[in-house]
Length: 306
Image (cartoon, rainbow, N blue to C red; front, side):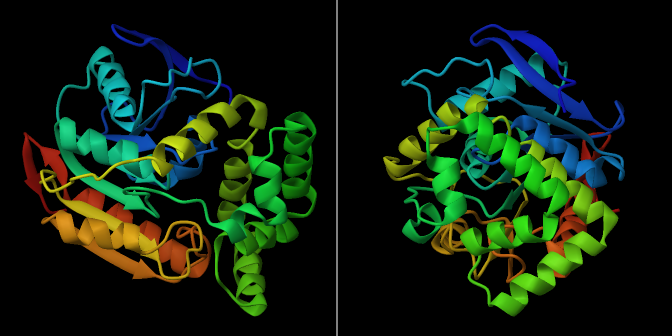
């Protein structure tokens, strides 16, 4: 989780990044969600296993990257582009945005050459924190600025020793599901070694919270005050997944994409609410995402169907 590289960019100085997968593989720029580190890309090794080269880049306010009030989601896209230029990735790339990272991914596709765009549970415009989520036990822990060291330690221990209970707590915060449905999804994850491993990596990417908090809160603040956005100039093939029982990011965020991006496919699921990649239906989401990216691979600068 701590094995990262640093690249020096012209405008933003030193920027951390992680890459996994084959060097010769087509590049997927992985844009993590808010409150989670760029190292969460390790939970997406299933894409690397299918020949893609995943690159995940740190954002302002996370770890050692300075936070500037004047920088927003469009600046995230500019940071990513400069890192890609330094890495010699000059052709169109695939962009994969998750949750709060959806805004940064959308700005990248709007401003820079993009072969295809994937969005999971993406925030796509003005965002208001759901009071139910914020006032849940987990929400209060994550959003509080107190005791981040002990909270991080407890969260990691809980995921290690009591994964099922920890999963259900996340579902309680992020999904409008019955207790039976939460129980079933938690059982599906803990009984599948790969799913459980990915969940623990996800938890690792949320710690230490003290190194992520400023970036997360800055993004929430800026998304709350975001003015109208126009994604109609995005013309690359786009695949979005959104859950009908997501209580964190309303379905209106997906509808906005449907209304403004012409070349888009949207998959509406129930899954695990905001965590559309968890459980049985989540595995179907991952399979559909993999197929979409393969369909839009570049061979000799031409799109082809695999």
